Length: 259
Image 1 (cartoon, one colour):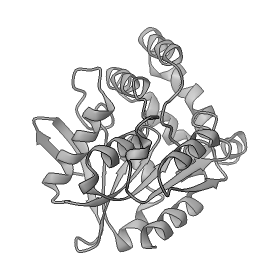
Image 2 (image 1 turned 180 degrees about the vertical axis):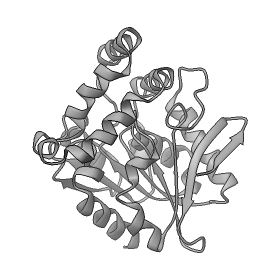
Image 3 (image 1 turned 90 degrees about the horizontal axis):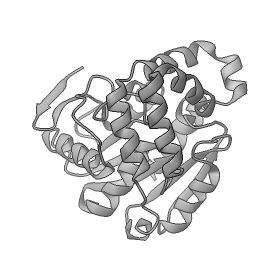
Image 4 (image 1 turned 120 degrees about the vertical axis):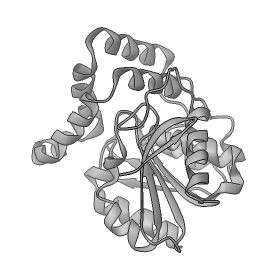
């Protein structure tokens, strides 16, 4: 997969699907890389020009000095889209990726066609929660935090039935660079878009996992109620509902983009 070298550092990305079709940018969650979208790629690339990338500090992208901000991560998307000649594009972000999508839709509305916000929130948790997590990673590394995260990311029923699907996701998180992870934790911790949702004008779809303890359905309802004209859909999964309820997620997003 190619890597873009720029003043942003290196951004690892994949650009797939027919170049004459509408663009779709996929943005990963905190602690994952762009392979989290593998289940969606076969369908999305039939009718869309799909750009997915490892967010700064994740996967094979550069770990630049932190802390980061959602604005900084969103501007990385615009820079990458510029190089890929994607003047306007649909954007689908999950969790942290959703925060990036909100910033883009409000601050670069001329670039966004349709917006999909999945398993995300206008504000994530509390300052104390994030500082405790940052402190835990500094003291213990990524392995303990990865084990706890998997319990939030997938329902107990899915974990019991699909250990082969869980293992690579847990390894992905365990091998995320700690400094990159912490710098992105700070970006999510400091994000608060509750008073700016009304400025989003792109057609928006909000997806929540019915069993998500990290960004609960209430968070999704809040987004849908405050973004003008937004649609809300709830899937049978936890946080990474694009993996746990992959077929429904893929079809829901595809139908929304084709409508």
